[in-house]
Image (cartoon, rainbow, N blue to C red; front, top):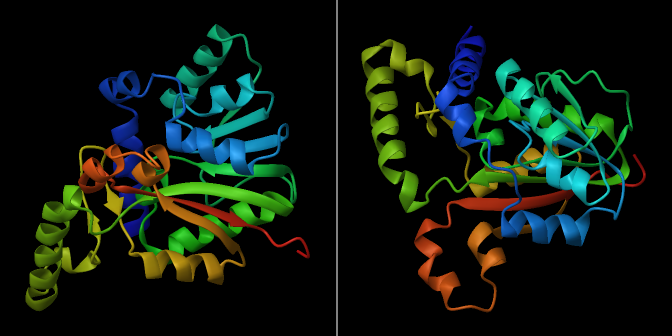
Length: 248
């Protein structure tokens, strides 16, 4: 199956020793810190989706949250457990798929899917499955913070154009590339699948969330500074804050 093939690409990419080492730095980006301080409760059960080696889970634990992290990669989770012990924190880490969460309904006061994790989920329908699983395990009124690549950011334009041309030619010629959709391409971590802003807005609405906030990483991190303009061309991440309605 196409989905299982892409899952293996991502899984194998994050099992690499070099990738694990490069992801071993602990700490929130300034934009993530701003959003977490502004939107998450001071203390609560926070689910860290695609937690890797605990880059974001450990800072959540350090400020008083009960951190729960999971990832597809067993080697990432093993490293995360070692990291949390080094920092003297008791954090529950699991090997798990975001589309098949084993947590009970209404277990969490918030959820975080940081960096490029959501972009490794293939296609619109699969992203919807993740949204709905997170929706299920959140308490009514709880917030979900996530980030995604901006589809038309100059940083990714070359890959998007090349993959798009291959997809179009593949559909005309009937080759295996016709299985891909626009916005999908391979990268050094295996596979990426981007959507434009309208696609994300539709997915948020279709999953039952309320959109609370949306802003690019560099506009958040350099608000009121000339550096915001100088960084605009590299502002390839968009942050979202969505809410599970209180009446759910």
